[in-house]
Amino acid sequence: MVLEMAGKTDPGLFRAGVGRAVITPPVGFVIDGPEHGSRISTGILDDLLARVIVLESKGTRVVLIGLDVWGLSSSVLSSVKLAASTAASVEPESVWVTTTGNGSSPPLWREDPQYAAYSAYFPEQVSGAVRIAVTSLEPASMGSTGTLLADVSTFTAGPGRPGNAALFVMAVNRADGSGIARLINFACPATIFGNSTQWTADYPGYAAWAIEQNGGGVTLFSQAPSHDIRPYDWWDDNPEPSHADREPQDVHALGLLLATQAANGAADTTQRRNVAVEIRTDEEAGIQIMKIGDAYFISTEKPQPNKFARRFRRDLPHSNTFIAANLSGGMFDDKATFDARAIKRGTIALKEMGAS
Image (tube, rainbow, N blue to C red; front, side, top):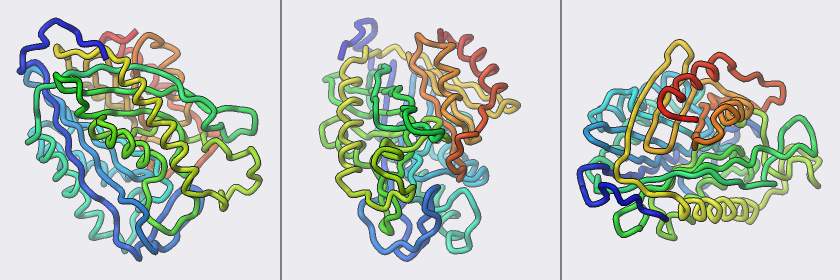
């Protein structure tokens, strides 16, 4: 970690707070996901969580939310943003919501009578974590970086096509260098645990836990556009697409790989106290854009193939871009098309905000 000297002793420059809430549905409720369809939950391997980072700089506050689910319907997403914005005293446009692409998920992208009460209460669960984050705001610094995590995913089009290795990390620290929060953006759906009937956050949950246990602070995992990507052994020595032979150690292995690389990246960030924050929403293109220091955030509510992220990064090679697409229950599809219009308009906006 390198700490930028200018303004580092001014406690009013930049503040950060974090919160968490358990969002695990009851045992006996349906688990759903992209590969295995619906099955009845029989237990809890590890809890699903809502993780929240609230950042504040010179009077501007943003809320970053990570959810251990596959995707959200537009109505649920809107309700979460509204509840979170109320809890943080900001506009909904200042709330950035991302999911982990968890294949053992409550079906929040579709209506399910069993989940009527859960879905109605879900925004309040998340907003509780936001309130905790707001009350814990403290002087902080932040920095981001890009690195690689290769050979853990593949494109669905066929064997021999390794997935996108791009891994972006944002680190938020205290003045003493200890971690307040980490945010990870990577493209590999959390479907390693296969057709388990136990609630689990899969490998992103294990990675977050590992980072948190080693002093990195509350860790959000953001699934980068991955409509056409699957985990690493989809082809190699695994002819059955059901992933029936997956074991907990597979989840732990990938989670630990991700945690280690993300921790290494966080250690290499240049930490800044003088952090510029800018927020834009392009409703016509369906994208939300934020600049937080040296990190740029882009999200869309539409499922997108990985090319959506690669095009942004091709045109902005010198910037750290955290790109998310709400999976909305979308299934794997190697023929998925990307939203070229959103990329064009988003790239223009990002360049106006300083990305290059």
